[in-house]
Length: 300
Image 1 (cartoon, rainbow, N blue to C red):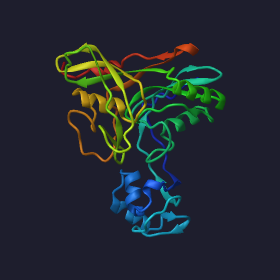
Image 2 (cartoon, rainbow, N blue to C red):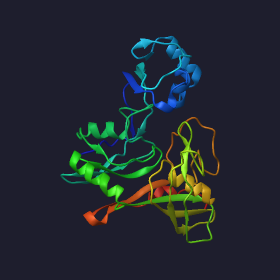
Image 3 (tube, one colour):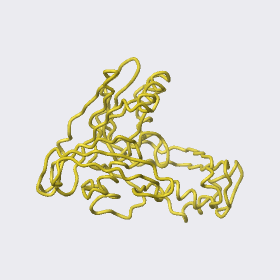
Image 4 (cartoon, helix red, strand yellow):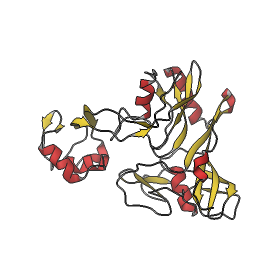
């Protein structure tokens, strides 16, 4: 099939109501604080103004910014003119069978709708391509590019989830990091937990989940290194955090990188690519090369 040649995807403004249910751990917070926690791209003051204008309802009724939430409450936010951030228009179908799709996801682009993205999420793009009922099998951070596997049927998606549980899935990532390791191979097993908002942290903490990543040096430069990363678990921000722990953060990571920024959200691609996905027992494999643009201007 033919794919759009535009380099940037821009969605026309549209009206939308987003609803979500309050979780047990979120009970007791004010509605303004929770909205800011879930959607930090707007300040608490902005959320308070939207609540005052009647654009936010609690259980289908008007509410106030300081209302304390209970578990199972339903919060609805009406936006009469959603303007989504633009995203790269480089979604590609890498492989397709009767059962599944391998798709290339560019960055920054989220996998599924939520937050600031609905039509410009990967699932929205694929819907425009004619793939209406795909099953998400695994995910990538919005700022990470690379291979994603989608099921075309519920039966295949269930089998794929079982392969993940049985550790039959092999994933490889490429990362351009700051610093030059002495060792050719090393690993990190620091557990991971949520820190605040979209940020996570590694180390022992209540609720932290086990995580393990192995790293291998591919090529050393003057001040940077190309690494292969082999995550054995699939925690959010795992590779980024484990590289930071090892002293070799991803070179342009604004959150966990060498020049971390106090940013409210992530809105640009980082040097992390999901480059290979394989299920050897099922003879399912997909691999993509390193982007040449990564090595431009890194200063050695």
